[in-house]
Image 1: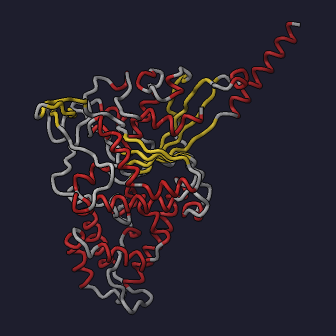
Image 2 (image 1 turned 180 degrees about the vertical axis):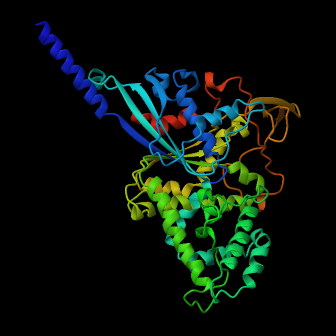
Length: 470
């Protein structure tokens, strides 16, 4: 009887191990956002919150943590050995430095894998496989590269016409002057010359860099690798540019023909490869948006940010008719979260307004997602909370403020940053001085390794994106 009992026990253990292994699952999370939307900071904080998830006090709305079912999170070996690892530990060290600094902005592609172990909540699985594992894969990349995807549906002539139209308006008209004057001095029907291609692409790149400056805050900057080249820096495949006037004569071997050839090579060997390898198998997506930056700059910056996001998300389009599905197949995203970042830069009573504004800003892609039966939501969040709520008296009334150390200062200040409009203001209402949202330094942390980072609503984002997987 003892041998029979031992046999049954061993078989039960083997079955449980088999079921546990077979039920281990994987989620590939797409963290999407334009340049300076906070992707690297978000990923760093998300990893850190999960690594310290056993202390559920900082994640009250993340059910697996608050219910006590979380057994821990561990960093796992790289999924792909040829791709650099996301520099999570370096980011934490920067946050713990004196003075604290945010993690460095993304310069190229990187990825990281997490293993989350948890207790099953399903009665049957509690017996067969009481402890389960969910693997989370996260890819980080420069936000500039997102804007390359729409190029796949544009010919060189169509793309050139789009850029020419943009350059007819300020501030692009002035910022592009040196590049435009150089193009006017060249006959692009003449035989190709590497020196001309190089000079034209360098002047165009300088123009894109000027558009990126904070005082202009322009978002629609293509090709994305021109200002964030990664390992392609100096390669001939990045030495081309759009033409404002298409020559009537386009012989083989001409400057025009070579510009067009390099544009097509860029689409095929840079854009298509990047999206095929990294965007064709996502399960969940969070879209990070920084409306406060556009508020500070003005209506043109806001309109361009909105247009760029709509363009990117239209390229995703989550039904079978979407560009990624048509080109690569396999896209199966069933949840998308839109998140307004830097929620700590507004007063707590403005968080709902910020969320409502975000919904208005992205109403078109949200309607498309709803039509495609993709579950969506919109939050205002702060991956790392840099300010504290404060109050002051003004004209005998209690005024809600925030307090933190400004980016260009070394002492904390308290200020009223202004109100967030629920609806998008008409262009003439974006008057100078209406919005003045200050950038803040990260908080002083004695030792981030021993505790979670302060945040706003990141636990709600985790629950929306991953909660149903546990």
